Length: 200
Image (tube, rainbow, N blue to C red; front, side):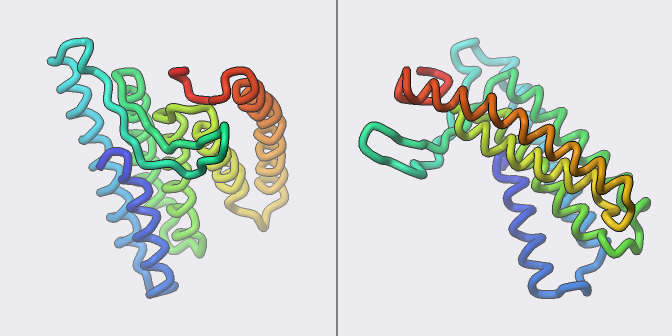
């Protein structure tokens, strides 16, 4: 449930918006995101507590979600990893997302972009989760792209103003510049080790 919380919230938000449109109440949106972030936070804290009482060899969980692509000499497996370090960052991610969501419920009350903000916040949290728990540089790159795109869109949230739009474009350009290094790292690893997995 820890790893699936943001994706679950994303599906529910999109389905609710498609079914109800603008009739989807602000309160329901905020309650959904708060409950999902809270569940993720409590789950990460409880797992961290169980790790604290377990032996060092047991403080490691691998979640295999299958293979997205498998070709001759190449495979892209969807694998996530939970360790004391990743749980620390998950706790921080869920806590900050919950705080931002709670504050924004009042700040954005009756704002036309209320749904858009919370949708972007959920996608940002999902991207952070992928960055933190990815077992391969390729999957980490996917999370990085989600974080980069949503960061730029959140910065440019009030897109009718010149300032936020300019700063959003600047942030997006910065993320795209760092993509070069990440893509080179993936290509070099795939060529040299035939895998971008961190444990190989």
